[in-house]
Image 1: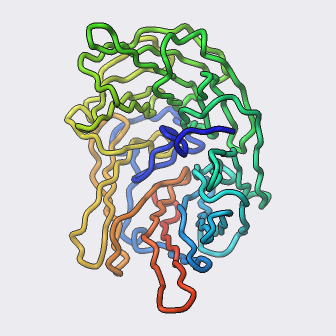
Image 2 (image 1 turned 90 degrees about the vertical axis):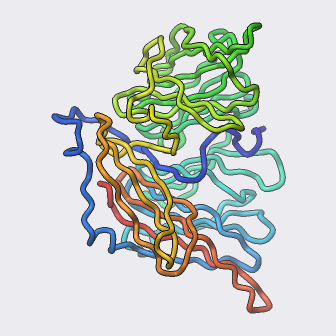
Image 3 (image 1 turned 45 degrees about the vertical axis):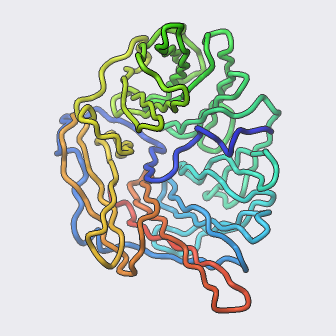
Length: 385
């Protein structure tokens, strides 16, 4: 199956937060009283694991599933397979294995494992793959070619939604089974530019079309959680769009989606969309001050988390989480302790159960005739539960 540029526009990388299995209960209050409070002893109780690669092997990414199980991945020198080890929240071994003809996988934590695209190292091919932690098996989902994969988005309720070059939108469950498929080729007048899934499982697809005046019209269509598309609508007009801008839709706590645009000059939030609403609204006040740092949802609809990095401690990087209540109230920060080993900042993410996992830079060991790398990760079980 053809895919574009290793999943271009599919999943972001860097400071990521997962929303798998998200539920947003009706909260009696929406201020800081619903945001998790982190005690110092919890920050000190982190777990740490290492994994050595084969000769000249390379480390891959790590992630956490909905039960707090941690995965570490690696590839050998020839890149023709991806090995993985899954550890329980306490660091004990759960299971491991490998996926052949694959060197990297986009890991999204689901309730009972990891789902994502796995990529062939030499050919423009990918497969939807599920690493089933509950049954300890690898499920590779083969499917007929239906055009190049354009965009993808995690479903906060579990699963993935993918949009293809032929403008077919497919929804997959948390174990990779096809829920539904619908064609949007006769619904949207322009080429799709972004896709997002809200906390109710509804999907918004937007296309951006340049007008003769130089402005750009943003057109949208909602597809509900059962796969039924609505009518297309004109969402907004952007007065000075960049020709090479990248658009992204990010879920908000109460069912909305937030649209951002990014070009060579930077990133900005431009509009919000209420669930299934056919008009755009303003950017929430807590983001209207120009803050464009990545953010995502805390589990249980209890607000938002944004990450920044700091190196005030000379013994290594420290990630700092800024917490925001559903109401938009700022609820302070939580700074992760350094490893004490002088590590630079790499990647951090949060799983559905509130586990924080930090991907640490690998260590290359060259003092032997068979050099190798040491993959490293540390995590805080259920820190933001």
